[in-house]
Length: 440
Ligand code: C2E
Ligand code: CA
Ligand code: CA
Image (spheres, rainbow, N blue to C red):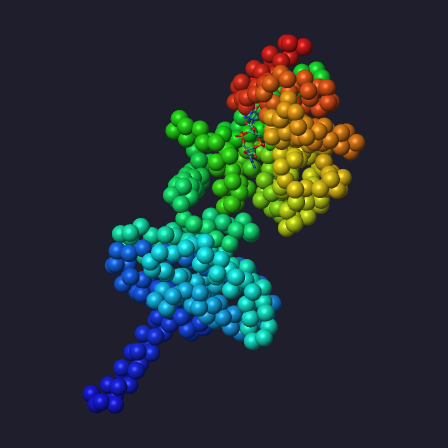
């Protein structure tokens, strides 16, 4: 091999190495470089902190200003990060719009995240300024931690912990959050089998007519029974809403409800109206109504015996045309209830605009009955407005006689809560209906 050739090969090798470690857009190290460079620092048993920095809505920026501008922006962000940290700290671009920062020694997290946020949230390209939003995840490493992959994962988890909280620029990794994530993935691993193994069961909580104290309806509430334990819906429903499994579960629950109603119809002259909780993920499905109508017909149930419960939060989602969806549901003969009323940010305008039959007043308002403060007036106002708009009202989470008396006085139409009954399994519900009848 002659010298010239050897030199060429060497250059080529260096070039390849560069390609393997350098991000051509920002000139910073890439993901591989981050792994290699941090390794050395991890050998030392000093304090270390990792920050992951993500540009929010970078895709929109690209769309609006084009990829060239997008690339320049990434370069500028890289520069600003570099300038905000010490020379010895590591800054790399790990993926699209995600940067990894590795800091050695004592770090004032509040200070550095604020500095980064200030520098990047208003950033210049040439003489034009752009407003950006960034979000960060911070992980303060254990002294003897050597596994960079684990460290990156924890910084990502810290970043995930502020998802949806737009006013919070950074999250710090905590054990508590890790436990939550572990539990979440456990639940995700079990959910598909849970349907197959019929681990989900529908319970029913009676709703009483306030005046007559006769049961007129019930709310269907799902229970997950796994190996003798019951997992609470408040634990798994939010997870299922995030990963869209709720679409399957809502449909499953609805089927079981129709099946139970069909059985009741054979045994009773009059069946209670059943309310079913439907998440916005289910409602947003194109074939939602068709699917649910097919089930309703399959079990020979009239939609007038059913109520669809959607949360107040769902009604303020701008991504779906709630008015159109609810009107179609209404056309078929279902009634519609707004759940957890008073906890979201809906407007009174919404109450008038949407075809709603019933308002479910959240337990937090009921809990304050008897307290001498303004919240009571708020409850009175909700009840008054509902009357004015011809909407029925259900009070949720009623536990005390005193609350029942108050709701009677204020003309709330229905009461649901432990005072009358906890959610009952189907057999217990049938017994409850029989006993409640005999009392009349
Ligand atoms: P939610 O729709 O607001 O249901 C009312 C919750 O309050 C139920 O909790 C019920 O058991 C509880 N509750 C009723 N009366 C009382 C009372 O007097 N005191 C107290 N402390 N609690 C009372 P649960 O069954 O744990 O359900 C939690 C949430 O999970 C429900 O809140 C609902 O949002 C959701 N959920 C339950 N089943 C389904 C379902 O099939 N589909 C969907 N999408 N969500 C469901
Ligand atoms: Ca509900
Ligand atoms: Ca509720």
